Length: 198
Image (cartoon, rainbow, N blue to C red; front, side):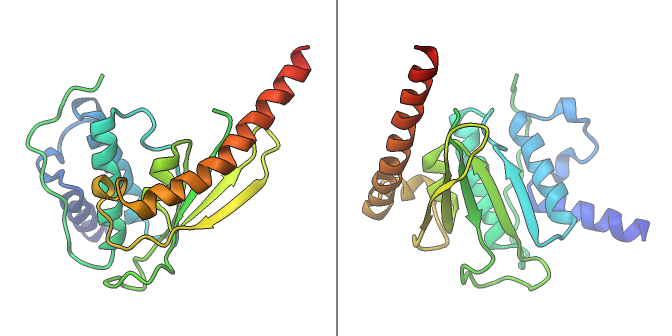
C-alpha cells in the first residue's frame, strides 16, 4: 500500500510538472508551485467533487492565468496521461458578491476515465475567471445570507485556451450578460448600505 501511494504521488507530481521539486519543502516553492501541489493533493484523493474556494486570488495575473490553464489541463485530461511542463526553478513569491463556477463532469469532454472525472465547484469573485473555467456560472447575492440570483450555462467550446477565449465574441457577450446581473446586485447592495448608514 505504501509503495502504491508513493507511485501515485510521483505520478501526480509529474502531471503537475514538479518532479524535480519532490524533495523540496513548501517554503522552497513559489506560490504557483504550492498551488499545483495543492491541486495534485486534491486530485490524488480521487473523489467525484472538488471544492476550490478562491484558490488563485492571491496570485499575480501571470501565475493566475497559468494556474487556470493548468487546472483545465488537469480537468480535461484527468483520464489520460497528459502532463504539465516541468518548471526548472521556483520563482520568488513573496467583495461581497461571489460567483460559483462549476466545471462539470457532464460537459461531454472526451478522454475521461469514469473513476477520475471530477466536478469542480470553483468559488471566485472574478467574473472573467468564472466564465473561462466553468460550464455553469452561479451568481450569489451580496451579504452574509447569500442566495442564488442567477445561473447561466457556459457553452463555450472545450478544450479552452483561457488567454484566447477572453477576446472571443461569445465570451464578451456572456460577460456582458452576467455583468448586467452583477451590476444591478452591486447597486442594490450599495443602496442598502447607504440606508443603514443614513
